Image (tube, rainbow, N blue to C red):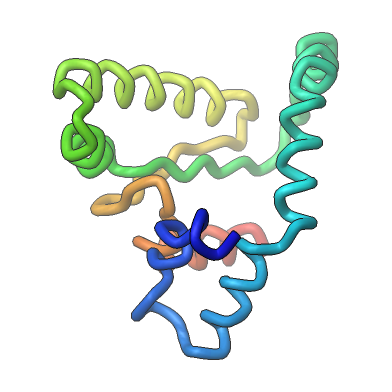
Length: 135
């Protein structure tokens, strides 16, 4: 499993301590993790039907933290996705994030400048500062 998850694990290198790195490797190579992911995929239909039939979203504090579109677009292009497609995808994704942030009157959208998908790695300051606002 370590080989299959090498790219994911390597994203943490030089960002965390050696002891934390060991925990990351254990987490991403855990059979329990992969079993959980498989169960989530298996239950997508059931879960999506429950969401569709649920009542109104509660009016609670809601913070949606979005990646930087431009950073993600560059990454898509680097991985051979046509630039036009990358831009369309990121624009649609942002529309969905805005929609999500509007589910609650207390919702807000935060764009994590200079971050890609793993905002918690690229901009932990934004995660921490926004979590503090909820405490």
